[in-house]
Length: 355
Image (cartoon, rainbow, N blue to C red; front, side, top):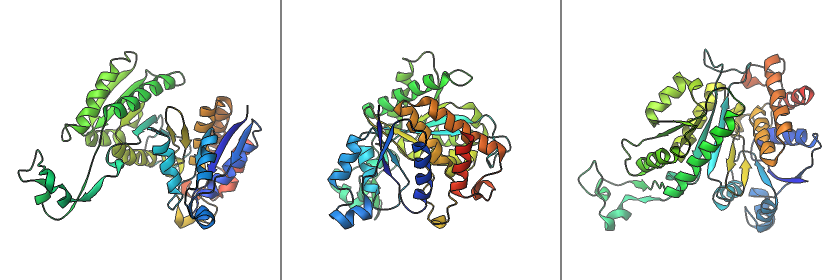
């Protein structure tokens, strides 16, 4: 059965990683069809919209979307892939690849996945001037006067819902069970949030995670305050399996996790909902190296393996992952960020040869 993948290559240096990865996937000859919805500035010039209806229809017809990093107007399509498709679980694996340039003295054995709730928290985007809150006469637990009297400034609303928390936590426990089939040790889920200060919002996240854990007696459950956990993640990253957290903390700590194993150039991500998923490498657009053909395509490659597994091609996903590990282990063809002098396409060619 043909599987259709909508490809949005992204901005700056991102297409330089995406294009050769798509070519590698095409060479597998496993029944993948790639379509290219026009979004962003190109679409705006032709249609007057940065995300025209035809692009939306192409995404809707596709089995999934492979999205390169964006810093521009193509971000409108990303908003649709998140909120329009209700992709609520942002999964960021963090795995040490022997041979990569990790800053840690002992990175061996790092193998965990951060699950970031993807739709709520401060990312609901409700902000405004403090004076707009005057009719509500709100005061906080730690201040006596109404918030709007603090001074001239702005506010942002943090929203944590019961439904949103429960579904991402259940997703995390199911992921831990799945990972346990292919890795050593018992499955474990770690929840982290700032429940000591944000007792109502983050406290709700913790309460629901603790309640959901009761349905998974085969999975170990633990929880930490997020600032304490940030220290623990750096000091003992090998101790973790699946880590679930609200949106903002997940955004920050998943990038920090990329630094543990080497760089964001190694960081894959898959974003899942109940009826759709899209896949986006976390390396960013790297505008400083655009046009030089030296962006590290490892993040895009490992993201593509998550996508292949989602589409039912687990065997091919495993082959690509093993090929990437082999290229790093040999160390002869690495991009500059990993201490080598290979181009992006040379690295991809080496992975293709290792296949």
